Length: 480
Image 1: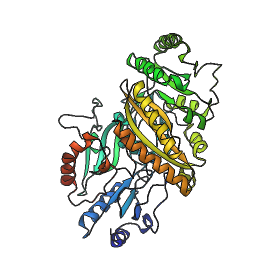
Image 2: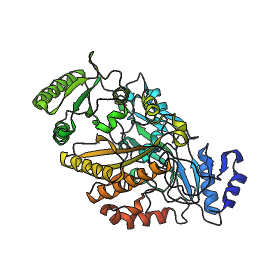
Image 3: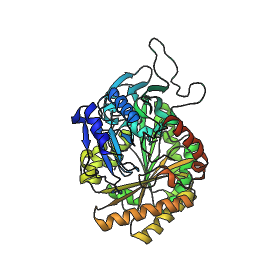
Image 4: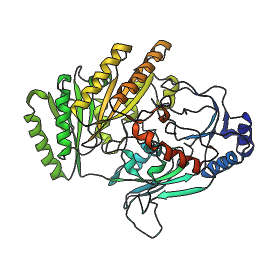
């Protein structure tokens, strides 16, 4: 993109909102930096529309790349896979336009953080599905990237979207509130469903959305179960059975021995955070059932304690406190853990924090699949000396979201080894059929070996060409 487009933006916008880049921004993952022409700090929807229309009328190449807060750590942060982009930073669109406690929805903009929305709902009978990431991350941005909360995958929270298309027109899809009417919160409508059409896409710029608020349960508690690595396959198969039989109410989280060491837990053990919630009588009955199942497992499990027990040994554990609060939509511990992990605050992670990379594949919920994943980790350690840590998140009784993390010192040799490990993760897991559901900037969809995405490519490319014939929006991680 020519520098003249930056000059054009400075002419038509407040010049204080436009930044011409001499150097590309840093990111905590130390990914290869694409060239970036500049950034616009957007403060209104009208500005977004004006920028898109200027790009449409511009006699030359444009490549607009929007992001919300920019805290997509471990996957590239603010970076785009494309060169010569103009970034649109949308965190200035930070209004909570409406919260309706009675009907269970909120209308928000992409700059609204999960911490802000969470605090608005404290002491009400509603809460939001938060992730374990920073309280300062965008709720809408993460949902659009199909992030995973403590209750379910966040795509389930999206009811409606507000979109600026490549021709500069503003549209709404999905469910939106109508004045004087109370309708069912149903995002699909009649006919083709368009809300999910705009997730993980570069088909438009999202300027707002309607998100679902969850009913706060009468009672919640978390079971902490530990087991040794040699019982991993048995444990996963057991948890799958418990999940299928309704013993788990949310995303079961399992921190492996590498991950638990990061937070000071017992060396050589896996630690499970298993949520139960609902009516007090239901929670009581399920607690008894879970304790019975634990006893049946015999020596396969080491211990079971409850979050609300007076003898809970994890009451001062940062991760345990975060997870227990997060199951109820509270983000008060999130950034305490983040600072302990990376050594700095959210605003400084990309420039000052330790190195951090994520790899996010989906696996079948089976002990055999997890065993195969850990064999891959062992092979990668032998090849690179990098030990991958993992958190096992259960999205249903059939799917595991495996959050694989690589921490490293931001020195040339360590960066090189970390990225070699990431390359091997993509190769080995794809060869096993364990494909990632979110991508980093150096492994975009165009490099995917997933047969399904290759089959769908022709349809998606046709839709992209129809909605954005001039290629105004930059190719993203999920572009064909």
